[in-house]
Image: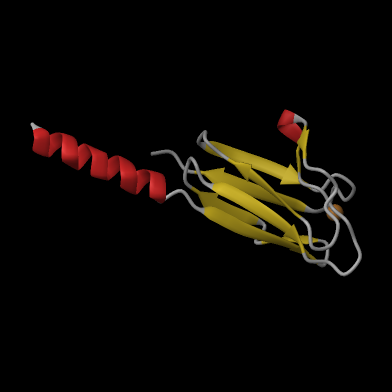
Length: 104
Ligand SMILES: [Cu+2]
């Protein structure tokens, strides 16, 4: 019994440690990569690497938008629920991206 509890605790620890942060850069008026596939609990971090232009990250379905990101700034969001989340840039609707959160 103690052995099983020990194994369960190890598995919980491994699963907590496996949460990752996936990087998306914003450059040349594009999200790169435009599509990321992550696991529930992972975080996506967008970083503006333009020389001058500012952008945002807007999830239209939820009306959730980041602050305006100026060059060098970043914004992060953690995703806990499986599903497909489309987003775009607030000021530049033609800039589109997708976060795919895998199910178990
Ligand atoms: Cu933009």
